[in-house]
Amino acid sequence: MKTVEKLSGIRLKNYLDFRKDPLKFLSQTREIADFVELGASSFVVHKPDAIKEILVTHASSFQKGASAWLLSKTIGRGLLTSEGKEHLRQRRLILPAFHKEKLEQYKVIILEETERFIKSWRDDDKRCISNEMMKLTLCIIVKIMFGKDVLEDDSEEVVDAVTHIIEKSASDLFLPFPVPEFIPSPRNKRYTSGRECLRDLADLLIDQAPDGDHLLRLLQTAKYDDGSCISREEIKSQVLTMLIAGHETTANVLSWMWYELSRSNPQEDKLLSEWRSIDQLDMKSFKQTGQFLKETLRLYPAAWMLLREATAPVNLSGQEFKQGSSFLISPYIMHRNPTFFKDPNQFDSNRFSEDNTKEIQPFAYIPFGAGPRSCIGNQFATMEALLIISTIGKKFRLELMADHHSVEAEPLISLRIKNGLYMKVHERKQ
Image (cartoon, rainbow, N blue to C red; front, side):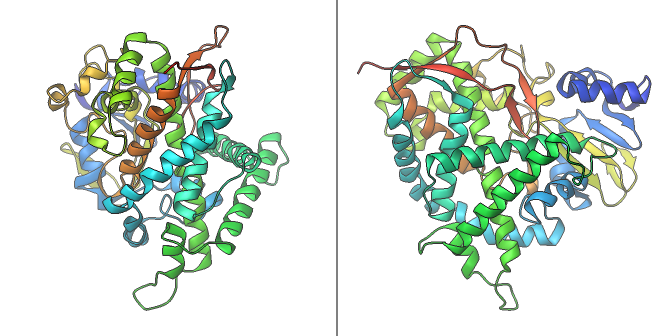
């Protein structure tokens, strides 16, 4: 395969095809070259070694660039959107909240919040599970990171706010000229309302932060190297970052897990047997469920796309790229590449058995990214997903509605289920 090849065709048509169906468009570039130039020094990357170079080896020569700038308009310059030394400083500041001993403390909260959340579920309920997972993971992240409880009505409003923000952000990301916020379009109005909702919540959380061992208190008591306190604006940015990134991605992965579980009775029986026999507080006991989660992340990675811009000239796989070149890495496309995964569109959790996982090429599987900008909460998200699905799965079987619309991936900022996932809840007989 060639190292670099320019995409053929009319650029406008290519752009429109991408906007119509990004996942299909990117998959069609897979067989062209390791780097496919879309135009104006913008490349799609399909080579694992090159991905390693961008995310790890030469990470200091790249920034998130336009994607970070766009999100910063909503959440400020927090961990998700800061660059360079500022990002490194923030990551070091927040990392203690995700240390191993902290994760041990979080397990009990996740289990308690999940049990509390499903108390209202009844046999034969019809529920939008994708929305339910959003509300549940929101309650968990707010309780763990900010020490506060979220009421049912409040969680619904915040989930809606996050949806409106993500829809506009995803739409604007690839527009050459995003619609200015002052234009009163329906999407802009929803976005503005959603942003105000989240900012009001962030202010409330900061002003009413309870005493305790949580991230918000850590931020409020931390100091810079010169002895000065962390500014309120930065604290607010980190709160907004956690409100969005700390629950939305995990909720989407859980929704995909429920969908795949509903398609296979043997798989469900195997996992149910594990859930009923293990100690949930021992994460090593989630062998079958851990494989199931990893395969879900392969087919439906929440971070379906990673964007990087070169801040200096860089050599990747022996090819020189100029400063300002932009690179699109799609875990979704990499994970479905038949070069790296046999029958790539087939769900098979056995790929991640102890023996088989050794055969996966490094950087062909990157559900949480890699390098200094990898997801800081990947262990937390993994633990949370395993605890939630096992706690709910022991008590309820979730069945896809008979008249359900076609289940399709919607690539926004993260990978959602288009138009939601609707399921019937069946209480299990013990």
